[in-house]
Length: 487
Image (cartoon, rainbow, N blue to C red; front, side, top):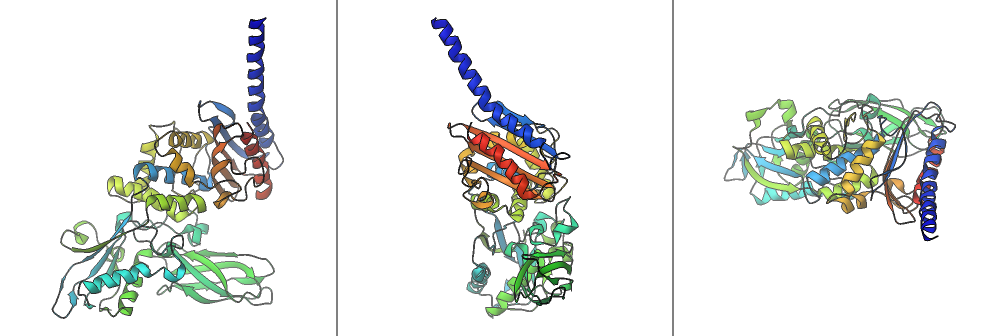
């Protein structure tokens, strides 16, 4: 009888466990065959973190674009390789001597090291975003510089001049979320345009102001008034091009509607902004603004060995940048993190260099076959990542030295960041820490769920080419997340 009772007890536990796991499998199967997903591609995987065993899956090795969940690769790699206390550097040099009356017989060089936090709205108020430039001007004054007979030269060359990663769309690059990485980044590489919109429908709007002021930029404004609410205006323009087109509609009767676009040439803008501040502080700059790109300086032509380092500015820590990247899904920060990994490891801060280091690092920790990470932010539609790849990454990070730190950087369902409206008041509320991804015909989530039983699960769910609305799709996804949260 004791043996029979033991067998029955084990059988009951096994059946209970199977039922608990099966409800997630049933849920994902129903999801994949539901209305609006008949022609969609779906990749799903959820594992028990403690055992590594799969709990439920659906085409888990299917690779596809994932949008912003790709940021998990840039933030995790930066944390692992750079460490949370690393701070990007921007260095100020001179290439001449200061004479007896305080004139620098030469130029000031701004050598960029890929710091995305300079004047960033994520770390400072707009009214104070130039504070670091004023501090730099004060430092130059203290060194006895009262006039510069040369130029202020911006040098962003250590991150290259691609302007944007491969696979970014023309539709995206001119808009705020399509601001590309640069060795010299400031003000989040954004430009704010203020529109005055007529009350009558279908009438052309007017751009009344631009901040920051971008020298020599030209605009082709085709934005008209509409009864629609919200921002439905879109900028078009390539990196380094000062020709900008803006189309779409804005709410009628708006006296000062703000629309954000990307900054065409951050390297030049940086040198321009510092020159303006120096003049304001009484340091006259006699030469014209220059950049390493426009001067086509390479190698020894811009060698810093013969220049004098005046001072170094340390940016925000990688840990703080990662927090903002994951919490707010900041494309620019994610791109910079990828570039910084390449820069620190090889001296080459290009996107391609960073991506090589990302692949090299993770290929030894989980199976990366078939995976193609083409940028740091997920904006590229050339990305091809599966649910298995995300689960492999998240498991490796969670079981490593930075596991708790990385998880704490992710927004929490129903509570914070981009996840604050997901599963709010539902079973997964405050139990799911994840990154979300969204662009046209793409929706994805990947992260961790701690269930009511105390077990921790690693999951990823990616959908492409759905025909239902985004809200309907999210509602369907929430069912799966809640099932995992009650395992």
